[in-house]
Image (tube, rainbow, N blue to C red; front, top):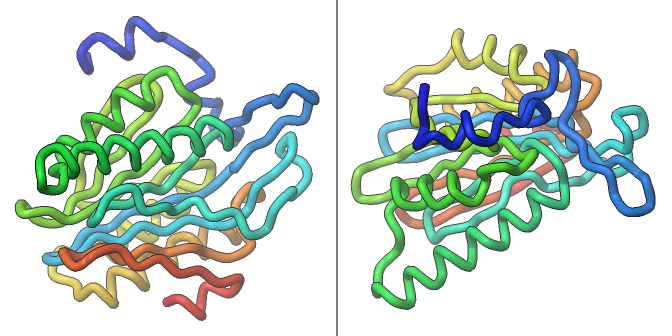
Length: 228
């Protein structure tokens, strides 16, 4: 698939690591920071849900942080869940917030989710980051899967990161387009919990964002049962 030619021009093998391995980046001190990660996004009739685990590792062997927040608000009714290198992910979040805020100031209204997804696609291009973007606008709830090759793919639900295969097993079995927001939230949290049981790069709890036309609500806990 040709996404404006960006995937072919970049052709960076490190954008998608071999199966079972993690995204990583090396700091000036030689330490490799990786989120490993499992992230999921789910839509309902009137809401979108994003969830992610909380583990950050050094070199894929040592858990450096057990409370990493990988779900962040970037838009009045939109949020992003990050899988990938920590530094580029943090810069991406800040850039998205700036773009969304500037658009709102200049136009007097929030950026549409489709426009936000395209902006995110341009910013992610070439980065070792593979996020999920979710939100709600006048067209309804939306979830987008993006990667450093430039792809921007919309779906009813999606998963990413090193634990995505286990997470997809839960999502495929339990996704219901007519589910309530509470039920969809439980599905997303359970997908993260299941992946954390099998994927060594995921774990230490979950952050979950519930996104509606009224805004974004993010909470987290070390025990997934506390946020289901």
